[in-house]
Image (cartoon, rainbow, N blue to C red):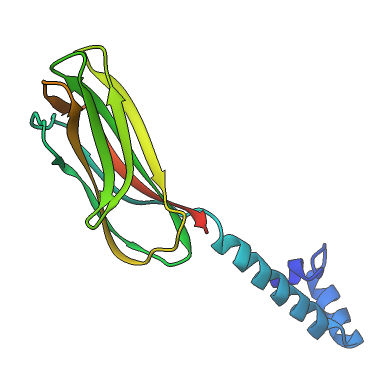
Length: 177
């Protein structure tokens, strides 16, 4: 591979390599190939790495009104400094009173990362997908989770889920900061 990157490829690589060695240019070409590989390594390091952590529930949560951590929708992962992470929460919201307003927080165990408010005009389920992107460097063990609470109204809420429509949280590495 180094030979091709350095311009030593072709129908007869062996002949070209021997000619470059005889001309004294082989070391220069290998050095150029190594520099190219090093630069490619830096670019590759910046690429998104994809899924880091995932959790799902396939049965609906218990009904809640007060601030409640949604059981089963928590993930722990090791964050690497200098990387950007996306935290996605997909769920069905089922309300008992059509005019209630509920909030959901994407949080670590210390603070709220992002807050989403969902007013509704129906007691049937509505689908939502929300996400948060980390824009500052984080590192070490992180636990991210979802909690919810009623912000206005008199009813309760359920995070709906089933085997064909799981509620889930997903953490993805989406590249460098």
